[in-house]
Length: 354
Image 1 (cartoon, rainbow, N blue to C red):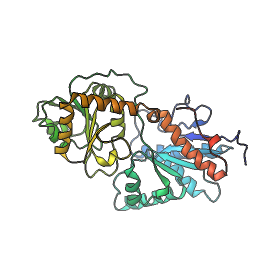
Image 2: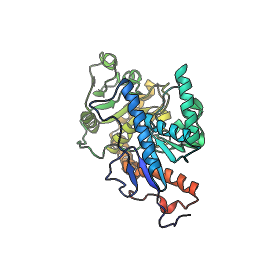
Image 3: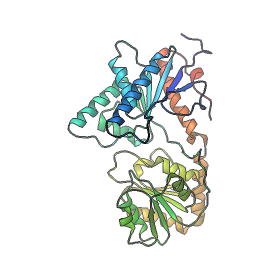
Image 4: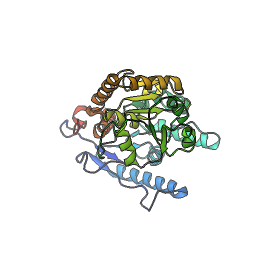
């Protein structure tokens, strides 16, 4: 057993700046290095090559370490190699996050998925999920081991950007994937208040065309943040049949800006804030309930101001900062490693950010 004062496993990661966690994290560079995003076969080869590189670097390390990766292709290539070579080389502790699954596929693709998640259950130690409801959803749909799934709230993504917070008198909604603009526009169609929807999703402009107070535009990421920062209320609706939870980045960023938030999706809200205090939440697909809650905020300036303040106060706590969130995830991996080694976890955990 190692000395308590010296036991400090290294965290290998496929993400992050070398300036952060400099003494305990080693970022494995890789991924596509050409011009533009990889497509077709090159996309899959890039993922395979990067996964192999991660495996080689992690297993080349002589001391104790863990690997923390996003839940994408190269992370599963790493897991496959750990499984394939497990009789020869002891698998390293492996934790994934940002595991964003969709509805299970059919046919041959379904068989490949089953094999992929068989590997998951064998050699991945833990998956950190951004939605509490996703634990049950993933377990049932993909037969993932429940004890390998853990919920952790998402984090804000505003630290490196500039924008000006104001109230320019409009309702803001935005995003492409996992959005129910039919319900949203139906709810907003009878509200006499300007609306700005930032999306590239096809068909949304046509849905909004009959309503002169609703504007739909595709914007840059910088413009998206600024339009959010200048709104009166932020609103979001998700499809009733959307497979997993969604929208965490949007509502956390909006709340950090002090914006009252109304969401049509009880599933994605679970595990975050108190309905009626920090935000308002209604069932997905319920346009009437969504409209009623928006109207309540628009008619009550004090309630709207208080809700925005309550939300901002909570979301500006350290737990929602990106580096604190990642430190929590690294500590999940480090604690697993300590248990495997029979070492006390406390001295080995990261306490760089708070």
